Image 1 (cartoon, rainbow, N blue to C red):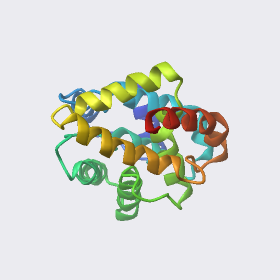
Image 2: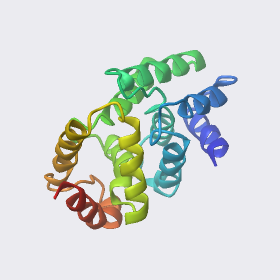
Image 3: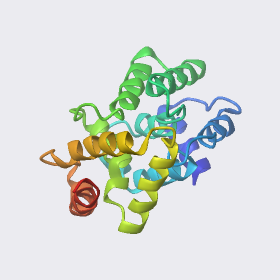
Image 4: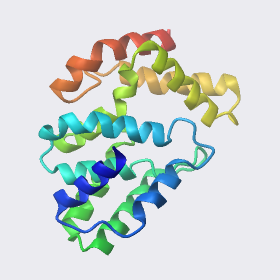
Length: 200
């Protein structure tokens, strides 16, 4: 599926995919110390996007943003999203994309910082896909929770538990975790069950 998704994204943009970029990206998604932000997460996101492409105003931009949104991931880094967005924009510039496309893709990637609820419809879709893991079945959610803890294994347990609870409680406190009706219907109830379990 990744190869089909990659070609579809660039085709939708009307641009040629830069030579050798997809394997470099896949390698980046496989770099340690990532445990959750890996090719597994990328593949899960791409699988969720494919049947939801009809919700996207600019599907090529949304799909490419997914490919890059956690391409740079250092658990101790503070600028992962910005560096991922820079990489995406560099690739788009190399392929001949205009500034407007680059700016929109950058904004999509930065929306996955989850520090504000997105207003733009494509950003809502992208963020919903990124957050779908919160509404996964209990076994996959437990695996995800353990994977994130492993990424932050250098953080003392007491501090990790406090900070992690704050982050997840923030999602639980929202009127709706998901911004699109389709994802709310599919994931909202399970996400709230999962989050209540780990924030209780």
